[in-house]
Image 1 (cartoon, one colour):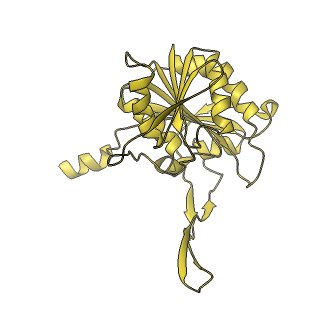
Image 2 (tube, one colour):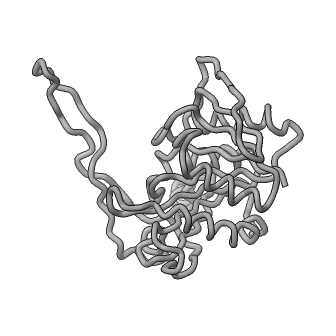
Length: 249
């Protein structure tokens, strides 16, 4: 099996190393990742600047870094790693959750999305923490993937669908299992904060506080809050069928 791996935390991220180790137990791996952190870039793509690609040393795998975004990395990987075709795209392991509406911002999820657009089985993986500076427990994500990746690869999925997985950042022995669930709701309050520079001129810092109600049954937010790994099939067809039918009447 030919496996292409990317992320949005950059070529030096610990989560990338962990994902590569897990994937190497199931196939031949190539890594194409951003040369630096590109978090929250969404499904952006470099169009008006050249992409510089540099091969780097990696134990047991071929690896390149790119001065671009995760979507760029998938497309570069298709050209430089396996022009003859890729069997699986893995994106992550992200240093933090990608739950609910996070998937619209996430570069990690965008890597899997781009794989699915190109007809490749694709999976994005994140470690879900709920407290700043809490340990990420990558060892839990690695062990869970080593055990479950074969079943994820065999799972029947429709066209233009990829899997978004969130592993709770807890000890492996505390993981309650896994659940296939819908997207939940995870939003941010006070997104823009006004600050002043040393000369008294205002500038704006974007971030915000996460507002997340954990009582969301049958969702990724609810599953991870209860100690389960959440597996969410995400469709690239965003058409709202009920609204479409209502408008056609």
